[in-house]
Image 1 (cartoon, rainbow, N blue to C red):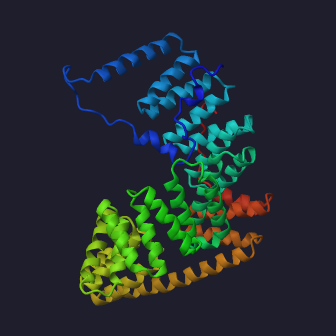
Image 2: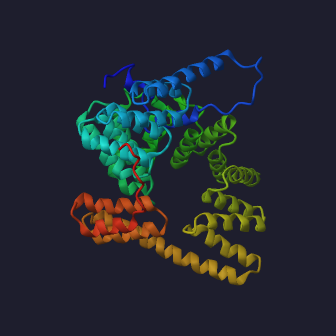
Length: 455
């Protein structure tokens, strides 16, 4: 099939990038209220006329891919990602030997946030066209969106091997390695991956259109590497470029706090809250800074910020913990109890809520509950120390398969399925024939998604 009307450009430029796949959903028009004939915008009348024309062309020649491509292009332009994907799926069926049709369909599935379906499409591309860089990038991106970060990084490396100058592969590799490290209890244990992520982010910096994103991710990598100078440098650059993204001042304030510069941290947070008063992390971090300022009246002010954080984001256990602690300082014992119980509910593997509930229940005269909470806290402290020892041993003995399996099982118990799976994949990296790793992966794996008809 000829590349009529620029087939490659049906899907927006850069959609294969991790951030790009969210574009269509963000720009999908919301339903509008019914309008009278006199108030209908002529633009909508024209669009409706054009849609009818294109649908008539499809009806007249349903086996011709070109009308379907034109209809997909139309839906793409008005932000209907679902309808775009429907038409591109038909095109992919009608043109089984056209790689661009597969790529466009896979990209459309990513735009719909259907990464498991996209995975099957891109797998087919990489099997049939193993030198196609975009196919490998799409497959890596589909892994990323399924939180399969180690697989995403491995696949991105294949994309890079086919074209070392193309930046998308390096961006996907860097972001996958960063998220891979961040999923573990102590990301610094994955310092090699963090350094590789930072190296690749710097390599794409010159050619990447959204430099604020690169600087932000560099700051995240260096924060976990405990490089305070580089962390502050990159977060400050990110904030200069993207001043309205509240996660940046939140992270920058944490970086300043790491260096002991609480004045700078507080200033960044207060400025950030003027632009984003509804961002929970800024309230929570400012509460922490205020508590250590030593200024009179800061307990009350900190309490108000912690309260705001849990109101905005009630599902974050750390926010509930700090709000509970602030309640105790204000002698609001019942409110503290509710907060710590909520934190415990959200994540039963955090030690702090059990420790605090033991004291709270004691104050309220609930001795049996206090005793149980205290015992649980002791047991969990032991488990946490054991986990740290396992991580250290596993890092020291990367070829020890049994250690990786034990660590994987522990991550699974903690609900960290991504980390559990990646520990087993680490075994296969050293020993691709490991029967133990494959057996454990088989037990861990959930049911496989059914591939779409046009693979």
